[in-house]
Image (tube, one colour):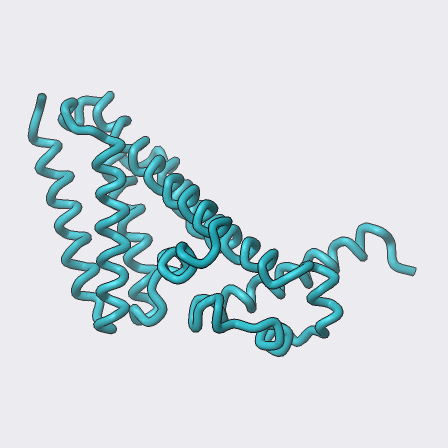
Length: 207
């Protein structure tokens, strides 16, 4: 006889399986082009099982966004909290982590969150707001490290950390998009080096 805990664990695994397969499909072909039938077939489940876990494709869409964001942000936070590195070292490591994630996929699918922002922002207000919050979270992580560098005297005090952090996220997403379009890591690498050179330049300024 199954215990309540084992049933919950199995249910959680099935839910994660659905989200995982849906995320792969959405990353490759977009949310609008991904059907419930696609997800059911990919995950190897019944449609009844899908609707047990998700009331609609819209609900699953939120789960995909949140899952992708949690995956990326957990990695970024882990690096941002690595006190074995200097604040500047952590900032560079975060940027390199994002770069590697794109290049490891041969620049093929770009950033799933950036893709969804482009695809859904004019189609679904709820998704747009959720994605905006996620990118704000990225900005805050970069901003926090820049402010830490300022407190430690490693960064020009006159730099607007919040404004520059937003700039960094915009540059990264633009580089990712260009590398996706060209199927070439060169655009992202160029923008990454430009960001790092800018940060180094601000380190040498004061006031």
